[in-house]
Image (cartoon, rainbow, N blue to C red; front, side, top):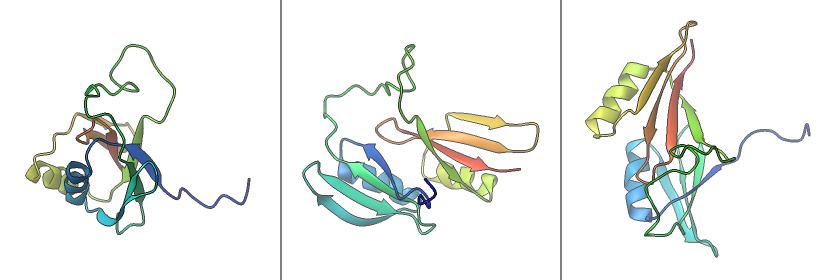
Length: 131
């Protein structure tokens, strides 16, 4: 389908809007609206144009285990979102300043480097610096 022009947004199911909003604001996202609709959904957007819809209906007693990443059985589904960055050292310092832990760093032979963090609900976010 040549009519597809890009990704409009990613949807993440979360437990608590206030906790989610505080975390993603640390990453530079701005609150747009919500909760709205029957799910309900809140929307945040980064100045780069990346838009995330937070589906606010995760069970409050849900396990902290991310079933796509943390269990031996490999379930189908989106496992993470990758955000492209220009300065890996600066981003790592900013995350550290906010108390956000980097869970893994990978450096490829061509100079590409990427690392991962988790949001408060265990959703995985990759920061990707191309070679």
